Image (cartoon, rainbow, N blue to C red; front, side, top):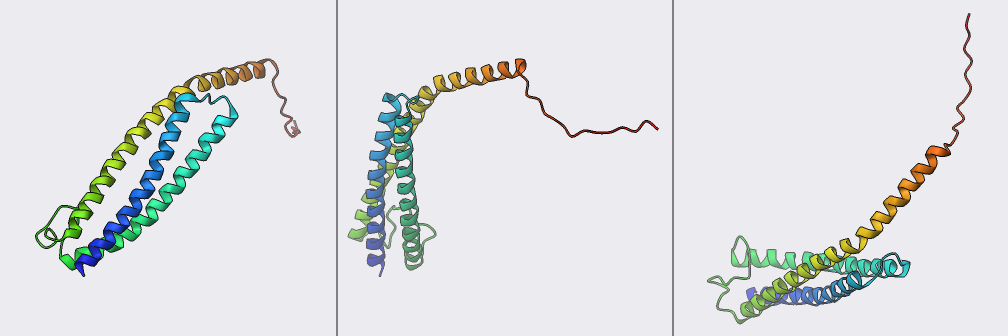
Length: 166
């Protein structure tokens, strides 16, 4: 039973690895867009929104997959009698060949996640660099509108009141 659970957990993590690979490709496209695109152009903003939507879908798939993996993990913890399963070999499961494959997949997942994190940070910095000038332009426009309001105030007609001086 333990071997079967380890194999199921390995397959669940392999499915996650495929999803993370697809996410890494999306993040790479996002970084490329953020470094090369001019976001004053609406088409580039739409492309960014499409990539962010795809990434959100990937995150939802990962969350669903992680829930399945957690169910298997809980069953395996109860089977083996451990508090937590970290992918490190333990006395009961260390001798099983399935454990080596599980460790390899967990290591691949860890590497993939760190690669995505690095790319994501790079993309965020590139996006902030691109949005900085646009924010400055928006601020100038807002200040211009405030200046116009000072010379052309809007008249708010309040409801009339009658004061009786008796």
